[in-house]
Image: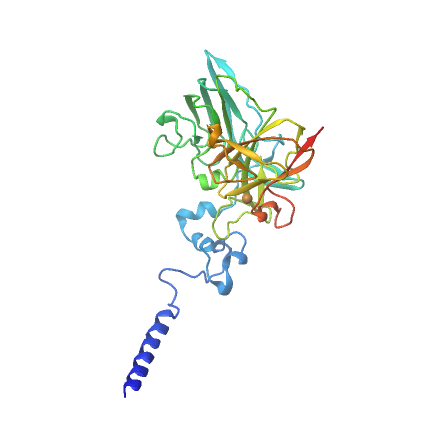
Length: 370
Ligand SMILES: [Cu+2]
């Protein structure tokens, strides 16, 4: 009798569990895209629709009008090939009564990241990264920004201690700079260190599309032991599908298939040639939306500054790999004491491919010569 009761209870329990696990009819919380029109598919088409037609987050978001901007290709009327081929070059300024005045124009160009591969990029002055602004701590800096993009924009001075009204956050500290408009930023450059500037308007799209650049503030007192070689390496990602560029981001259907250091994928990345015995400083900046554990072959390095701020000598870790998360900066230094061609590369090894072909992406050669 007892055994019969236990069996009945077990059957009821099993039935309840099975019914709880059964698939619910769709329509309430996860609408299916049954019309199969192109507009409901994320970039990448069927790949992002998932198995059995189950919508992935990427393809679902295309149905959300507020999120639609992130799914669309980067475009602008009459985009021309870039006239420069190297990004991050020093921007010249004019002196106006002791103020260093810089001029930036935001515009779209076709930017070459690799032989035969170009992305449609939103840029400062036509390059990716945009031009480097390099000043000395305490300098009065004025940056005049003309917006020639088809979209509004703003500039945020990432890590620089600017007055709040100069912080570049649309709807909070300023109105967006509309297409055709000009806006002037002005502040005192402080503190010394490795910083950057980038768009803060629809940053998920505009920063991924190329609106970023280095901003270096040198200390007033010259450094006791300055490096012989001092390079800035800005890491980012791209999504290029069927000739269209999309803002790469960690969303299903929006994943990157190209990865760049200073706007170039290996083997188009710069080879850094140094002499044996040179002190080398690399300023690693992650400006995309993915983390990059950067690994140096052959030599260990010390982390001498984080997010622009010096690390006291006793606290300087000795490493051969450092993970650079979005928005972070690591200044690393090493003495190039072994000759040879030493790789510096991301250790998420998909990030060292070009459209899934290895080698590529986030790699460069440090060539140590006698
Ligand atoms: Cu990586």
